[in-house]
Amino acid sequence: MAISRISELLDTLKQDIDGESVSVGEVVKTFRQRGFGPLLLIPALIALFPTGAIPGVPTICGITLFLVCVQIALGSDHPWLPQKLKNRSISHDKLDTAIERSRPYIEKMERLLSPRIEWLSDYPFTRIIAIYSGLFALAMIPLEAMPFAAALPAFAIALTAVGLTSRDGIFILAGVLLQAGTGYLLMRVI
Image 1 (cartoon, rainbow, N blue to C red):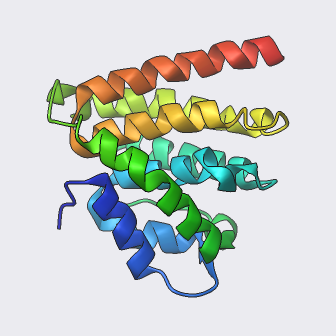
Image 2 (cartoon, rainbow, N blue to C red):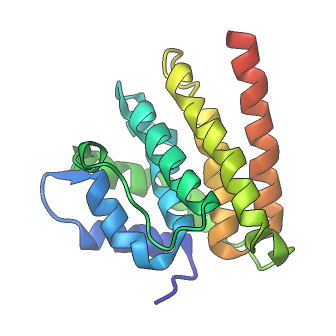
């Protein structure tokens, strides 16, 4: 079942996961049949919005994104994560809050999305983009030391994921260019 809108994807996440906390494994299980785009988007959004200010969350999201990117680059059909990472979780309430805060922005963005430059979301470009995004996902780890600095790579990867999910090459290119900005920020920090 394909989801055509990002807001529908987030609604599915809210509906399919119960309990007081949400584990990384539950998110992967919810979206594994819907492709890798959503699996890049959800951790990027978690790191981007206020939940990303929780110590350790950008690191968990960065590692998760890196592992998903490696699997895309290797041509894997289904995502795999280590059990220890799958068991990491955040409060269900915090996830709901992040989804609701992001909803107005996502709905505005969805009006801009349309299939364009679709070849960027096909093989071999997806693998190249995955390698590139995976490296910048790891940048979230050292940037966590600076307040909200991990939001830049998270936003860039979220744009890339939105582009991959919607087959919109303009968003993919915007995400890739913003990831280059992350590289510049890292060089300035180090």
